[in-house]
Length: 428
Image (tube, rainbow, N blue to C red; front, side, top):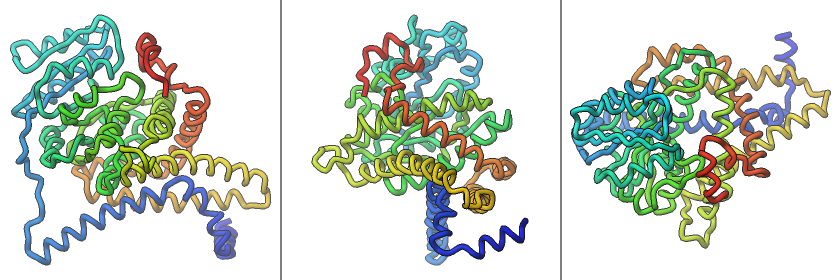
């Protein structure tokens, strides 16, 4: 069989090679691999330049010390909130903490109040009725005078230097928001969480380095992100609706500010441990591709709009191409294969699978180059052979979410936002 497969590969002409590797091109694997290589080359060239010139290599120095308010908003997170608050304790000198209990019934306010006892810089807000995360964050906004507002999920854990790291890019007044590096805390709880950990390393730890470097970063994770407080107020806070983190990020870009990424501002958060939970979560995330990039913020691509910038156009083209156009093309390609039984689908699968693995191994090697946790991340790499199947599963969820949001505006019937709130929200 191996001999037959090798003979088949050697017999392919140029156009047949393109057709054979089309799934990879439509799967955006080369995109991530090439961006990872670009990030590594940029760092390596700087290292060589420092060595040749004798100049000291840039070290991460914590010279910028703005006042910070961390807002922890959650619903029924009593079990995880204590650990989150302890990870903030003494983590930064000019720190205010506001905990917003968004109508919990599990004693979340009691956990927060116990932590706040005897501390003048911790405030606990208990809301009798749930309003959703956006509403909870807006509730905290008038209660702080800090320069930087940091949002942290109530099931997240910050590494000791995370707050120091995430505020450093704000030395540049053009920076309006900074995304932290969100990793997985329960990485080895199940196969689903293990695969998500690898995905986070590829898409966040590496992918956002590249996006920030090309000024096309369009997301600040809700689990751990920082914003200039005066800009958030200027924009009227968070729009009350689904996908509040991505929406605010795009609004800040439209206001003319840059979005940065702090790769060593590390936050660990819990991810779904079953594939059923994972698919529900990703379905909700992918609705935003249509809601924001195709509807609400499509004016960023309009040459006549005051919000037009070439970097904004590149961001939208990236999202439209890889999250929509190529997804439809991928499934169309599969239909084409089904209609052409003469194609050696089994051999084609083996070829694409091996090339995908090679690209993933390259990316993982670059992850280890930058990683502060090389032993753990090396162990995570043992799941690389399963990743092609994982990404295929996510493509199913993506096309499903895009179609239902395009035709039904499904996101505005989701329980992530309470009914009494979403019924009064503009449905983009």
